[in-house]
Image (cartoon, rainbow, N blue to C red):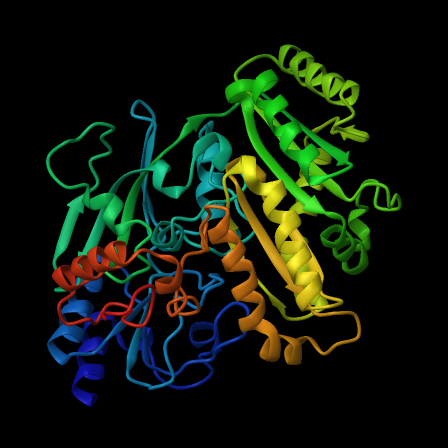
Amino acid sequence: MTDLIASLRQIVGDAHVLTDGDLTAYEQDWRRRVHGKALAVVRPANTAQVAAVVKACAANGTSIVPQGGNTGLVVGSTPDTSGQQVVLNLGRMQAIRAIDKDNLTVTVEAGCILQTLQERCESQGYLFPLSLAAEGSCTIGGNLGTNAGGTQVVRYGNTRELCLGLEVVNAQGEVWEGLKGLRKDNTGYDLRNLFIGSEGTLGVITAATMKIYPMPASQLTAWAALPSFDAAVRLLALAHQYLGAGLTGFEVMNRFALTLVDKHMPQLRVPFIDNPAFPYAVVLENSDSESEEHARSRFEALMEAAFEQEIVLDAVVAENLAQAHTLWHIRESIPLAQVEEGLNIKHDISVPISRIPEFVEHATQVLNDKVPGMRLVNFGHLGDGNLHFNVQAPEGVDAKQFLDEREHEVNHIVYDAVAAFGGSISAEHGIGTLKVDTLPQYQSPVALSMMRAVKAALDPQNIMNPHAMITRG
């Protein structure tokens, strides 16, 4: 290993091969559940250095854990405890290489912070629509590696739908140049989509060509209080009817999720939080190329219809962008409020939208029966069928003890319900190492066999993030 470390130092420079000191930022996952031990943390500056690092590790038979902002929730970018893995952190590769206004694309390196890309595009008059709570620290490479979702999927799709091309270093240290930015290219297998969502198990994404859009001329945001989850689904149908393609975001939150925000972040002033008659709330957004006056008339027509049908019981419409940002900030603060409340059992699940109310009723009843006193934090991207169906410990119960003792049982209850309603146990966070042993219970043997064949073909040494997503079998 001494020879490998020396080679890595020669490739990227002594200062960017970290072996000593406090490496917690690289060795511990965001939720602080797992703390691994790396042989070294290597921080390349460009694609050529990434390729050279991968070649050196492959020659030595040393496994690699690609890492972006390390903000994932399924322990997919954290080394194991062996002290024999190289963490390949791409944080130095932050360049926005080009904005092609005529092609409506931006080419960006994998280590670029999502918020940085958003702000650069906005300064040029364009929108990069990927938006999620961790956007101030997550990176484009990580977003692509996990096929991240976020709050605007209902309009723009997951990260996969925003990507037109990739630059990738494969498991042999070769560079695939695929940054064409084409919207039509039928020249064989779609390698781009193979690497997106692969969680660093097939290669290292070093750059990408992403779609951008003209900035919308109008943007309207509303917060609605609802009597039931079924009402949220009915409101979503109305929003599609009245707003069409202008519907940008549609997020649902249960009352307990909002009480946590109110408890731990009282400065945010959650709308209608003092009224217990509203068990659910929705924040929805309409953005369009129309004038604000025209867009507002359609938005008001939607809310009028929702009140007439008693779908919405109370609502507030943001009068300006500052108010809109405040409403969204409340929604995006739910995960942080959960952290303040204590460790919790997280679920990132998707169910067909038409079946979500029935799923919620069924899964909640079973959890109440099996885990008395549990507190359900139910929120997420209803517009695309993705819920974060999280379980907090009962009041007064030690959160860590609850997690240690009940996580397996709770996961089993939730995932069985998800499967029964035709859903997925991972909607946008991926599998990582946290769910790697669970996946075979809910994925078909045929699908697993094909995945393993792809992994064996592209990474025959099994050096690329070998403990994440799928076992070799």
